[in-house]
Amino acid sequence: MSETVFTYGAPSLKFGPGASRELAHDLTALGARRVLLVTDRGVAATGHPARIVDSLDAAGLAVTTYDRSRVEPTDASLTEAAAFARETGPYDAVLAVGGGSSIDTAKAVSLLTTNPGEVLDYVNPPVGGGRAPTEPLLPMVAVPTTTGTGSESTTVCVLDVLAQRVKSGISHPRLRPALAVVDPDLTTSQPAMVTASSGLDILCHALESYTARWYSDFDAKRPEQRVPYCGANPVADLFARQALTLLAGSFRAAIRDPSDRRAREAMALAATYAGLGIGSAGVHIPHANAYPIAGRVRDYRPAGYPQDAAMVPHGMAVALTAPAAFRFTFGATPERHLDAARLLEPDATGSGPDLLPAVVLRLMQDVGMPNGLGAVGYAEPDVTDLAAGALQQQRLLSIAPRPAAEEDLAAIIADSLELW
Image (cartoon, rainbow, N blue to C red):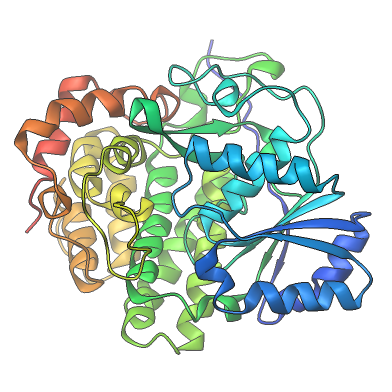
């Protein structure tokens, strides 16, 4: 019997220039008096967290700042953040100010300070134990300072599991923030490569949720079996298509001129829309591939990111195999792939499996992405290992519009070693 029900969940949303100046009101409305602000040192250097702390102090809230969130969190960094919260708490709420890394760190803090167990107990199987929280989490307010991750809207915390050299996630509806406060004014300080990488995360969120397996193609489930990622559906489609339309008119402009407020606001809204789409529909093959690509990095250090450790930023890791992945999935939903391509590039011509990959590749070149996996340190001998790592992401692969076996993933990854 086929599924007849889809679910949709989203945080309360406050959007617009200056929205972050109202956080004292928002946190007080949640009943918070003692607040843990979670950020990272790069974002702290912009002055945004300090300004927010001053406004909260002036309103009589007691704020403690944790500024050691790791860009691309690990199980170790999340454990450290939770230990800090336990030692300095208790708190009434958690406030995340930063990119997806800070927001995901705050999600883990909220989880691990209210529920028993360690990080790996909650990580999705087969990497971790897949435990579900049994106790309510602390209310969380997410204030993104990058335009892309969508973490302010989702039920997922993404992390690198160091011992297994793989990126995975914790997924549960209780991880969704109570409130997302999206202030485009906070994004003007992000470096060009951060804008490019996080913007490609927006792109892939929208494309993957729009091309995901349709919700009614799954077997029917009991209410308690339904998961946040339920496949493409009519509500998620609206957000995905609008995100693509906004990206088409703003992404290149935001790279060319970081001070272009119109482009920055459109990018922030696109990120919000795409996040609201994936929070219901989910993502598939490009994100599954991205986890081992980021988790097995050797020595690549992208401009605009901390240089103290090698990394492939999440949005970059997702985008590098996206053209080949969408070529692979084209046959399952040709009309959606073609529609997405023309939303991004209205003048694009063609009607076959290469149209969407070609549009994505042109965009990647224009925003300065590396030329394939080879440019971030991978080679042909790595393909088998990367495919095996991607295969572990069954939560994501199950949403793909076309089944992807290990040999399919290997072919996609091999095709992505060099892109142009």
